[in-house]
Image (cartoon, rainbow, N blue to C red; front, side, top):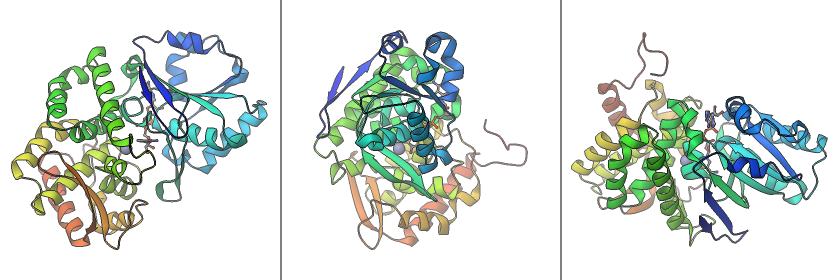
Length: 368
Ligand SMILES: NC(=O)c1ccc[n+]([C@@H]2O[C@H](COP(=O)([O-])OP(=O)(O)OC[C@H]3O[C@@H](n4cnc5c(N)ncnc54)[C@H](O)[C@@H]3O)[C@@H](O)[C@H]2O)c1
Ligand SMILES: [Zn+2]
């Protein structure tokens, strides 16, 4: 178990090897369940069979519904179901459902208690700790949000056995980011563990998830509300969010983070902060094998990417903001990134990816 100290409420992360913990949750009459529809379909015979249907909201997942529209739908359903101030929401799903349910919990009746059961690799390894809730607004990713941690997080890697490759490798993007931020030993540990992770070996998954939490917590501990050190967790996200926008969310979040790290490292190389050797090692050994999505050249067009980066909510100066890694796995944020640097990085990485067959071609229009 890991206890996370928060100025809003301290909360515990529990790690479970099997899905049996769900039966205990089912006994509390004040619980209202918000469940990812896909998870429901996959798991209802096994774990949700005897749930009181009057207490269940099934939510079909779509980044386009991680908006006020999705939130309103859940408010309406909860009011219909006579939820009260002592209602506890149990969210069972990935990062999208977590963001929506957390937002609902933080606003309905001025705050409801909620419990989080993350079911994707991204949600288990990364988003389930940190207490952020987020909604997309118009074309802007995660523009609205609150800090509102659940009272408990229950992590069980068994859920990951049913995750498809795209979502699994998307989660791996955040895992890679965190381990790079954890320093050389964490990178080595992860590199050794990758074959086990890809085979969804339960022990490898559990170790990697716990290690991801340890690293993320080390960045959040003294900066819960994103005023300084926690901003560094935006590594891979400055370019990553912009690529999600330029691809109209065709690139899954964690895959965009991988591309974002490749781009940030290219800028670091050009600025003399990282050696070519280190950049190549990270790109070829860690990032490229985890890049499963097929890309379009237009996602890397300068104009939409720069426009999206200008709207980055973490930007403070006149220039663009970028979190980068130096040679020795030391993280820094700069606020003077120039449009010309973005352009060069986009062209360099697009060319590099093209050579490695990462772009769609006529006969390759679906995910591998
Ligand atoms: N709040 C935060 O701190 C934070 C941090 C990182 C990312 N995020 C957000 O998380 C979102 C991405 O989350 P995600 O990658 O978990 O995606 P997701 O929630 O969209 O889930 C991906 C897909 O997997 C399905 N799924 C979920 N669990 C499954 C299971 N066990 N088996 C089979 N299918 C399953 C879902 O139905 C969905 O189709 C983004 O919107 C991102 O902005 C939030
Ligand atoms: Zn992320």
